[in-house]
Length: 335
Image (tube, rainbow, N blue to C red):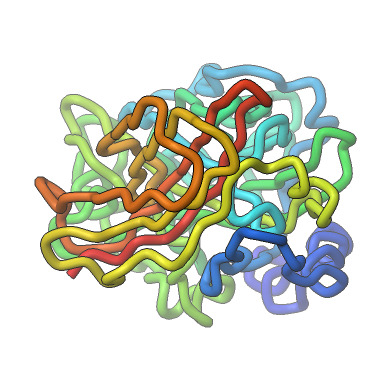
């Protein structure tokens, strides 16, 4: 069986397991808090024919190994759909991808991959998300192989090791995209070019759309690239009892979409400090606002557009008082 046959024949056992949480879970009722209506789980995809063997052995940040190529920093944020789309701390994130020539470690010597790398462990790693739900890996820019666009595999587990999602990260492919630049960089060993490249729209995995699997990539061939991507999973569900201790409630942001400014109505049970952090869709914080010792009752907090470009943002709203720290998230659209 070649790689194309594997992809066409379905997701396989690992991919099937990853679908189960999506089918069984639903968005919970949350007293006093709004669940984001369009905070949807990222697409489940096949783990492919080359998943990491014994991934628990690869808790590393630098996954380059003995490979050469153009530097790539991989920043991934994990958000929990079942907790108002907030950051998921303590999730286990495995990633793996091919080298600049399209080969995977731990496999080879067969028709699926003639080059034998069964005794190599490059370009595979595992990390646990921090308090912001984020992990970062040091790697090289992946190459490509027949039938597939440039991509990275990701398998996410909860803190107990139960599978939450198997997915893949797609790369932009515009005329001057990083994919085009890299595959023209023969001096760095990327010799295939774009002749015969399979674009996302024709990829067996991505042909159904890559809206919530598309990454953001910045940088240059000479200086290296940085990939940023947020993945939404069905993590642990917070029930009503988890929210009875919350010391605040939010009403709808207005106007939303925002043009010049927006108001966040927040009702506090006790005098509290309130922090609003604004994240872009890639998980990068772009602004932070703090209000000290707001009075109990209704407070109307204003966000000014300032330097926010048009697009979608996540507002992380934190409340701190004598009873503890509490937080939730809201989605903000900017025209």
